[in-house]
Image (cartoon, rainbow, N blue to C red; front, side, top):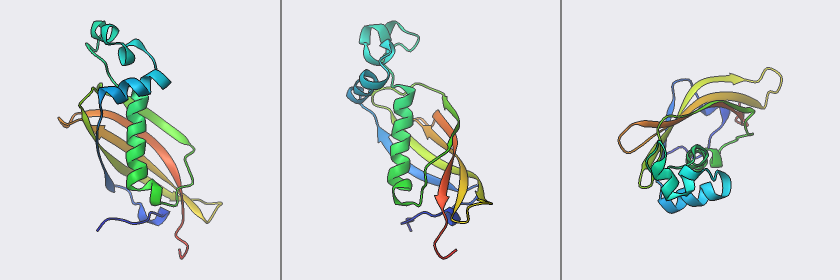
Amino acid sequence: MKQTSWYFEDFHPGQEIALGSRTVSEEEIIAFATQFDPQPFHVDHDAAAASIYGGVIASGWHTCSMMMRMVVDTMMGKSSSMGSPGLDGVRWLLPVRAGDTITATYLTRQVKASATKSDRGVVWSTWTAVNQHGQPVCTIEGMGMFGRRPDA
């Protein structure tokens, strides 16, 4: 059964949540990079071909944004999320190219109820995206604040 809402109490260490998949097109890669990260290997075919990547690749920030969308669509959009105080780390492990399909998971590493605010808790997590070959392309480690279940 698919979870319909997420509160702090719904998270436990070791829990892995499948976030789905997304295939990225060259048009998306170039449009995102043109607006937000216009480095030549993201937006210029000739420069990208001459780079260490041998062709146009997605901005790492684009990869993170696609992962964020999957997180929101799968769980955050129907959660008691109160936002995040920040990330502990982002790693871009392999380039994401046009036609790649990334599949992401959310791993709960730690949970802790707030000692000073009884209406919330903190969840530490690792998000991992792999390509269609099962190779990790990006990891994000961070924390999120979630409201407690009203009857808790």
